[in-house]
Amino acid sequence: MTLLIVIIAILGLLLISTEKLTNINKAAVAIFTGTLCWVLYICYGADFVLSQHSTDYHSFLGGAVATSVTVKQYIASNIFLKCVGRSAEIVLYLLATMTIVQVLDNNGCFDFLKQLLRTRSGKRMLWMLSVITFVLSINLDNLTTTVMMLTMMHGVVQNRRQRMVLGAAIVISANIGGALTVIGDPTNLLIWNKSAVTATNFSLSLAIPCLIAWLLPVWWLGRMLPERVDTAWIGLPYRGDDTRLNVWQRLLMLIVGIGGLWFIPTFHNITKLSPFLGALCVLSVLWIVNEIFNRKLNNVDKMIQSRVPRVLQYGVIQMMLFIVGIVLLVGVIIETGVLPWVASWVAVNIHNVWVIGTVAGLISTVLDNFATAATFFSFFDVATTSQGFAAAMVQNGIYWKIIAFLVPAAGNVLGVGSMAGLALLKMEHMHVGWYLRNVGWKALVGCALGMGAMYLMY
Image 1: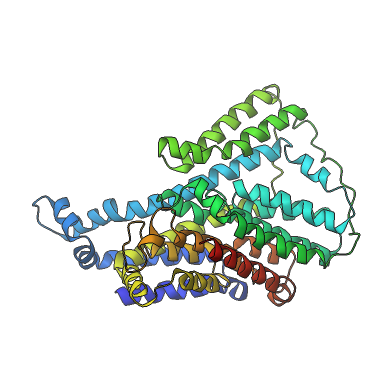
Image 2 (image 1 turned 90 degrees about the horizontal axis):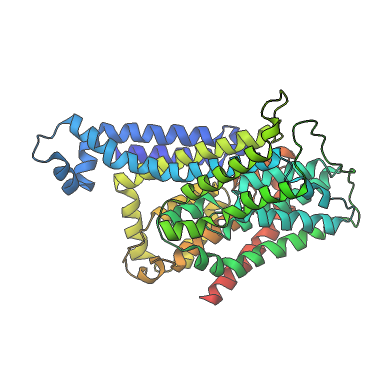
């Protein structure tokens, strides 16, 4: 049964990595694979429980006779729910941040960003888009930031080739910016939730590698743009009676929403509660401020119109389902004992965390970032004392930072290694071959130099 579960998991990951070719949504594949593997696991639950949790299971029985029902109850309450809890922490965080973005956009808090794009200079357009994306992705998840900026850019730039170059810069900026903080990427939330890293130490350690992996490819992409780009004149969007907020009200809401997300690491350090609770706290405060500012509109027929594009709403929901599926899949592989066995083999035969990180980066070029990082993060626990890995696996150890940097950075090489990259490929109908020839190798050089900088730092 273990072999069957592993085969199904590998087939599922292959389908996920070839979504561009098969046109089968990887969120659906992840959910189906994770669900099927858990069903197969519980069919032989007694064998798995006795081999992995014998002591805890006998304590759970409390002297009662072991039956198939008690085994299923133990799995449901002591194993499965813990796995669901890990995915729920990330999904709830993403749900809160997505809602924050929608509330802010509905109230026109991002309108001033569109006004910054009033330029025909190719380099100025490139760096404005890149910097804004990089800063936003530090607080928000990569996909939300990418689709927002791609939608904004698409309505401004008329030339398709120029949009492809600018879109590539947006994807690189979003993925690298998200890698810089513990709240900027769902994979970083995994290790932050398990206390493998602390927020300040993590960001300071990755600052130089991330800046290299971001600035160099973006500068290179700028050389592909003409001096003047084909742009359309941008006016403030007509909102009718759906909003009457003035500038300072919009600014205050932006500070509460985006600025409040910066408080989440402090909230987590003080309370030791899951980061999603801090995100929900920020959302609730923003919600109250929104109700106060728009209280005069509560009794009118024209309510706030949702201006968030459907691709953002559906894309983020798909990402949430994908994360649930991957966490369930990785969780069941751990419970079969396969991943612990692989970790032991790696610890004995591969004594270099940089080699492991390089392998993770190579895999992430074709496999989704979250699936890759979740697998490699699950190889080891913070308390791991395997040969040669004790110093690298402790809290704030280098292992966590290598994977957190290399996986999203290498995911930029082909574009299919991240949901942000896939969003660009679909929106602009780009071919992977064009992306690799014009963008991928630049991202690879930036990734390699960033990794070199990290190596010298440690």
